[in-house]
Structures are given as structure tokens and as C-alpha cells.
Length: 82
Image (cartoon, rainbow, N blue to C red; front, side, top):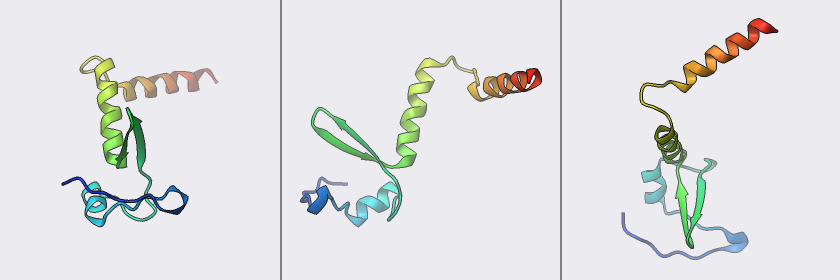
């Protein structure tokens, strides 16, 4: 997809062109993530924001380790002591 120039409207609104929204898989009423880095604004779809978060976690968790299983075990152990 190519770069596109747009204007900031009243209230700081920016219109995301339909082709961009379609490519991102977002529509009216959907939430998006904003990222500001070195003067550059990025708009991320929820799917892309999740993918990036998962990549960050993967860098800090050993291969084969399942945090969800650990959490479930911890919760069950806590429930037994209540």
C-alpha cells in the first residue's frame, strides 16, 4: 500500500481511507492502538498489537514454557488454600 497525504480535521480527527481500514481488518466502532515513536504516528489493528505483544513475551520466555499452564496451576493451588 502506498503512502497517502491527509488533513487533520476538527477535534484532531484523521480519516483512515477505506482501503487501509480493509487491509487492517478494522471498521467503524473498532478500537485501534496508537504508537508514537520519534515523531511517527502508527495505527495498529488489534491483531497486529497482539502479535507484537506476543513477540515481546517470546523474547523473555524460554521455548516450551507455557505461562498459561503455570498460571492455571498457581490459581488452583491458591484455591485449595482458601
